[in-house]
Structure formats: C-alpha cells, structure tokens
Length: 357
Image 1 (cartoon, helix red, strand yellow):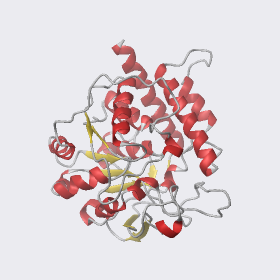
Image 2 (cartoon, rainbow, N blue to C red):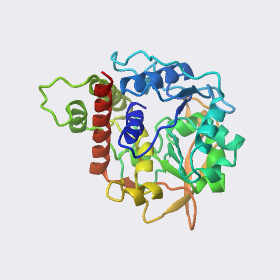
Image 3 (cartoon, rainbow, N blue to C red):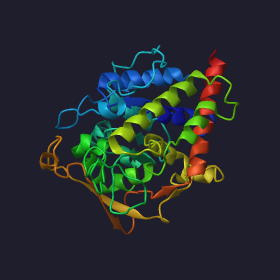
Image 4 (spheres, helix red, strand yellow):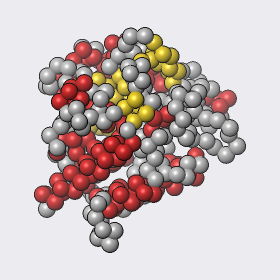
C-alpha cells in the first residue's frame, strides 16, 4: 500500500493524474488498521488532504481474513516512523456513494478505479451503480494468479512443494481468495471485464525489490553517507520487513515482489490510451502480446481454511484466451522504466514534504 499511494500521489504532483480518494478494505489487516494505515501514509508523503473512506469490513458472504504472517498484525509492521494521521477518515458519507460521486464528477471515459486489495468495495460499486461501467475508462486490479507457465516469474513455494500457483493457497492469490464472490461478480460482467486489467502474481513476481533496489529507494541518487529522508527510511524499513517475511514463508530470497504499484502503474502506461497518447515518451510499456485478452473465472467452491481439503481451489483465477474484448493480463513490464517511475514519484513526495515544512 505504501508505494502504491506514493505512486498515485506522485502522479498528481507531476500533473499527470489526480488521486480522487481512497476507500479502505478488509484484507491484510482489519478495516480499522487499514484505514489508519492509509491515513498515516498520506500524512507521511505530505498528502493528508486526500479523503479516506472506511469501506467494507468483511466479504460478501464470508468472514474477514487477514495476513499477519506477511504484513504483521498492523498490516504495516516493520517501522515505528509512520506519523500519526492529522485528518480523520470520512465516516458520515457512504463510501460506495462517495466513489460513485467522485467518478461521475470526472469527464466520461477518463477516470480509473484502482483496486489493490480485496474486491468487496469495487464489486459493490458496480453492482449498485452499473451505469459506472460505461463511464469509467478502466479498472486496474492487483490480484489473481494464472500459473501453468503463463510467465517465467519465480512463484511462491512452501517447503517441499514442487509447484504452486497462488500465495495464500496452492491455487489462489490472497486478494481474490479473501472475497471470491466479489471477484467473480466483476470478471463475469462482460462490459466491465473488457475494461479490466489484472496485475497477477505472474507479473508482480517479476518485479522484485532486490537489495540494489532497496538501496536506491533509501538513498536515491545521493551519497550513501547523507541521512535519508524520513519517507525513504519508512519505505526501506517496510520493504526490509516484507523481504524477511517473504523469504521465511515463501522462500523468495532475491527480494519481495512489489505487487500493488503495478496496478497503479497501469494508468501511467501503454494500457491507458488517454495517457499513452498524451505522454507517448513517458508511458510505461506493459507486454500484453499486442492485445491478448482473456475471460476470467474465479472458483467460489470451498471454504477458507488451512488445509487444501477444506479450501479446494477456492479463489483460483482461471484465464482463457478469447478473441476480441476481455480482461487484459500483462505478461511483462519494462522493469527499468518501472523502477524509474517509482524513484521519480518518491522524489516528488520528498519535494512535497519539503514544501510543507
């Protein structure tokens, strides 16, 4: 979440986009914690003015599920440098209605919805206000895992496993698994699916925050003897914590994958025609094999649990190539350009904080 908000706020700072608001969601931690974390991050990057709306505390039809083994009990363990939020969340307005109003206030065919967690809020949005499907330009989702050699990314594995598709179970990625019914409602909507991009684990596991990357994030282009800014110290500490848990749980020793920012980066890429036509030299290049599209089905049979005999393939993302319109599932991204984008946005966040002081 931390890098994600830096990226979205950074895009506003360089006048190439605007973050209209954030609705928080159950997932990595409780709704109370994710709402606090979002506000704390916005405070840290100098953007406490961005409205935060607490969203759904649980899935459509299942209990909430959290991931303390990966992200800690708070959802952002690893640092004590995150500031206390100065702005309260907005609780006197329905979050789904707030999303609808913010989107409709933008010209038709321009706004994007970016979902980097469980899809309950987004599913409720389009189920309640189906007219928004025609109004938005796109929906970018971090979630899902295809497997079967879809890419050559190093996937998560537990000790003794020969192969694995998902992270939370052998078959499923966490965000989809938490609320598979919400996920299926999105992908089974043909009009919405045609506007949807899925940043699956098969993509995000290609984008590893190696020690070299972590050093660049901490120091930027400055001498390593200079004291890093607080925001860089926070991000570096969070990545270090995430790296340790990913190595311990999944055996990925090279560095942790940077999941969420890829879903945000879609709006600053060749997959966003408006952005690509306006900024052709700056648009990040994703590899969608020249327009390859898919139908996606989410398995909803099974129950949350620790044994595959209980979970089955619950939350599995089954993608089938289709002619014509469908879900975009990129197989690759220009890694050098992506990391440059991250570092540029981090520099902009530094400058924003400097102006506030």
